[in-house]
Amino acid sequence: MIYWQIFLAFFIPGILGYGGGPASIPLIENEVVGNYEWMSTQEFSEVLAAGNALPGPIATKMAAYIGYAEGGVLGALVGLFASVAPSIILMLILMAFLLKHKDKPQVKGISSIVRPVIAVLLGVMTFQFAQDAVFSLGAVYTILMLAGSYLALEKLKWHPALVIVLALLVGGTTGYFNIE
Image (cartoon, rainbow, N blue to C red; front, side, top):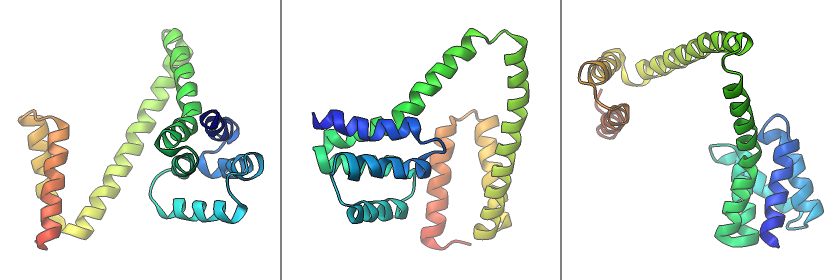
């Protein structure tokens, strides 16, 4: 029964919490503190503070922690799944709808608008990463990394995962040995 309660405690806020994790925190508090009385408001505040100190989505961290506290490892997994299940369900419904109507002009029109927007967002993100790299590593080292990555991906046809791992190793080695 506890696993069903854990599931409901995080699934319901996931459905009703429009706006993501921060918007669902009061709903989670209502379930955890008010409905199931698993912890006090003070304890919930401490869990929230600890969750905010860690990287990543707040709702999933809280779901895993509270689920673990109430139901062990299986409780953590149930809480984690329940917090992401509404998004998964909505994505599957949306994908089924899009696949059913993919040949309609309205859907094609949406795709023709969304693709350039995503390309611009990825370009801006890449530019910001490059700026950060130039600032932290220097222009010459950044250009060498970009050129080496391009060569490995486009000319040598290496798998992107391999290029990423190699770049991480090179960057980590650079930071570890203080190479400039």
